[in-house]
Length: 99
Image (cartoon, rainbow, N blue to C red):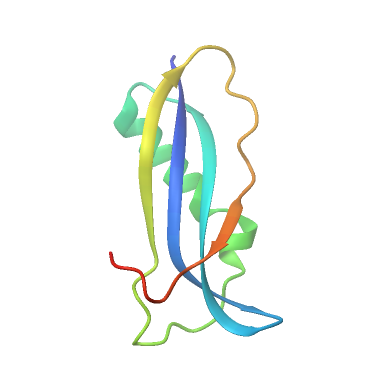
């Protein structure tokens, strides 16, 4: 079965840090064995939903916050075993940016 690399962007996740409450975004890569791109996306999303860090976000959503979302920026079939891809790269969300 083919291996797919999924590049995923997360936006507007509320967190508490040393500056108080803020919104962050992240990039992450997940590798999954799947029949096609659609199944790869579904499996990668299911894996993200089980992630301990994402599950730990208990900060209540504020009505004025933009909706947290996950976007698959790229899904590509790759050669090999597709090792790695369990971490995150975080960035602060710019409150003045346009969608």
